[in-house]
Length: 267
Image (cartoon, rainbow, N blue to C red):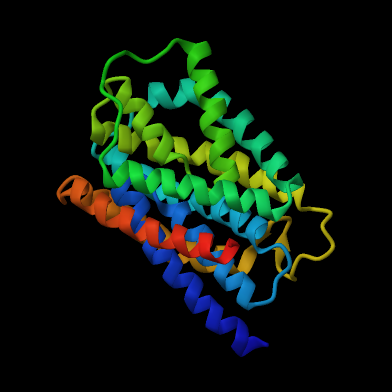
């Protein structure tokens, strides 16, 4: 059993490398890689309810990844803290409630929602679809409503919200590097409320594997965090020098492959 666990610990470390680097570099994508990879690992380990475990564990890992990424972006003065403060109340409520809803949903509709979302993000990146900067940021009630929406969707797919918050801020005339940095900061309250929601919604589940805290699997969380925290900072530094637009298209192709594999499994 120890050898069996150690094999998957190496897999968790590898997932952390890829997810942390992508989250720091692109401002999106960490959870979209973590969730399907964890589902695969958990299925191989014979876990009951692997998708809920993957979603909760992904959000818990983003707690740590976002801190490393925030530090790097803040050092480059790329975080708009006023936006973070105004959107956070809605984020906290929306993400926690979304995690509670996800915990009560069966696996099949939750997996379909994830597949549709991953295709949406992939097409958006591949075709470079983004809203034209045509307005300013909304008032506080509007920001609260946006936070509720971003938080609830993020909790259902186990992400830090960058694929939603970056386009929203771009639409509101926030410069792209600032939008990416601010998105990293917004990812922290998403991860905090989402992890809390999945822990509480999975607390009484009797069939979860040993080492679980609700729907957060601690061995996987540990492996992912060890490497993702290091790589998120590196990715954030390179975000200001590498051709992010071209890298996003390559990442979109990867997402299409992952989504197609999940769709084929469902069908």
